[in-house]
Image 1 (cartoon, rainbow, N blue to C red):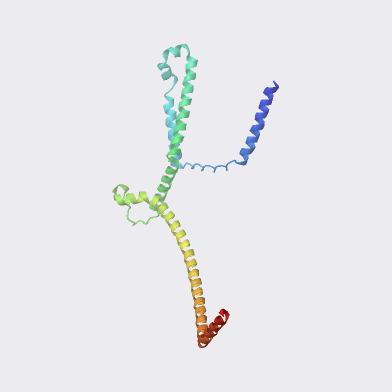
Image 2 (tube, rainbow, N blue to C red):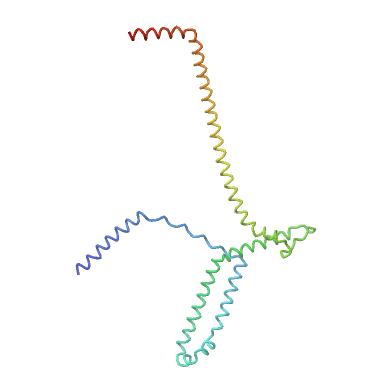
Length: 230
């Protein structure tokens, strides 16, 4: 008995140690998921229509129809069959609702219906605010293929254009920094060249000043060298 009690204690100790070690290396918490879109009028009506259709469909699974499929069980175990019927209807409703919600999320039905709502509201506002003598817009089915393609590509191209503009601004700022660095380096090079030219001028002036006595200094140097060698 004591051995059995000691083993869990040792395991708990190791578990606590592992937990302490793991807490030190615990990963950062993940970012919270994005909030679901609030359904607009069209999305709300779409969900209500689905709920009503599902309710009417499952209503067909009433007791008379269900009992007609299993007459023997209905006559001998009616309560059990009724319980099965109720459970089947509840399970079907739960599964259908879960699948419907997953489809709404996967296909982004609510955001797209909200976008459609915004487009319709914008079109209505433009129609009301337009001048009475303004030309009527061309119906969508009469538009040329080029205009339809441009309208479909406009959102994607706008996002890409914004990204390219941001990259262009970044490149321009980097180029401006590099340009300033090159200007400062050129100024430094010119200053060094000016100082080098001044040093060369000093050397030339020194050579010109020593030119009259060069021969004399050379003769004296040779005499000293000769005297030392002797």
